[in-house]
Image 1 (tube, rainbow, N blue to C red):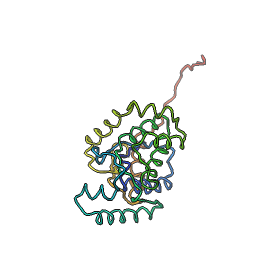
Image 2 (tube, rainbow, N blue to C red; image 1 turned 30 degrees about the vertical axis):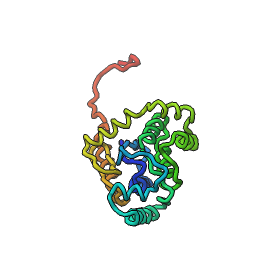
Image 3 (tube, helix red, strand yellow; image 1 turned 45 degrees about the vertical axis):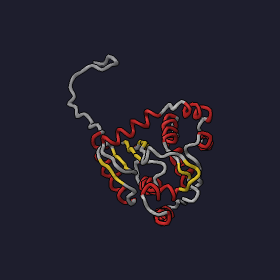
Image 4 (cartoon, one colour; image 1 turned 90 degrees about the horizontal axis):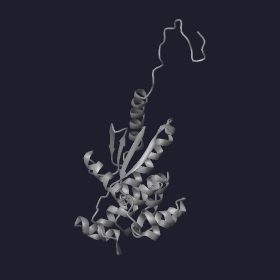
Length: 234
């Protein structure tokens, strides 16, 4: 069964939701029958990468609030992140456009390392203060999880997967996804936001049960009579 997850790398609830979803997966007995794919979504595609301002300043400007209010919002999600074992450091976070990082995720998908790449990118942004719009930084991240740095750099320089990113965003629009994280189970059920683990568990069980029933072949009930077989026995 396929699970598609639309998210952005600079979305704090996407990382929190990832941990809660993973906790649900640990308690799911059919994990080997799941295909999990991360889809691209840009919360603010017009963001201009700027290493000279803080994430607090950027949020304040974007929302028309004070920097102090922005810090309070940051503290709130930082505390939520702690509850699932994550460390957020918005004082170090670099304001960056995520298009290039999303292209890297598509490159990693082709190399069967997308899940590892998603985790590494989220940690790079929220914890380590890495500029995720910088090619050298992305190549370094990629090499640390087993991607070929030369191939990755070539792909990023050529914008090889830009159209794939655009198509993910188009798909989100068709599904009327307006915020992330957004989880789609078998293109039948959707979960919006970083829900509690129990919500993921319930949806996993329900959607998998239905998918399994739809994809189970009923044994043919046969009435036998005189016949010949492929070995020539009649």
